[in-house]
Length: 121
Image 1 (cartoon, helix red, strand yellow):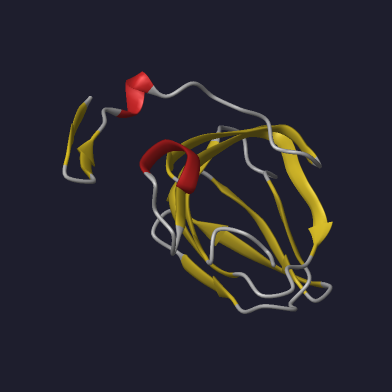
Image 2 (image 1 turned 180 degrees about the vertical axis):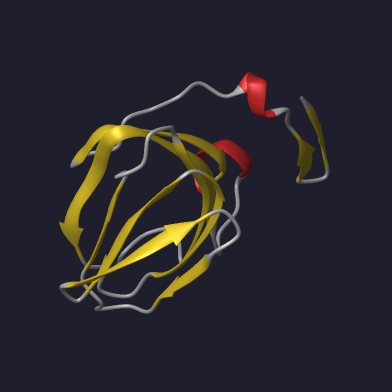
């Protein structure tokens, strides 16, 4: 890892997979967060949900999120309505919108998650 004057370069292989709360067969690598890079304005991670993996429906008070699907397919639930998502779909989730994501495909669902601010106030 390279780190200088607050800037850093990290290879994804240097970061361990974690299983966040309320995630099932769903794991994330916390790539740029207040804990890993000292950022104050956002959280950037890559997530991989195995077939049948999902995050339970939830909402954020102040956080805004962007999901960018890289591989696989599944169902994105926004305020109770489910839509198929697949590679290169980009999902924007404003604060207060209940959401969940389910891997209904046959292979891993891999996507980037960018969240701002990093804490939900």
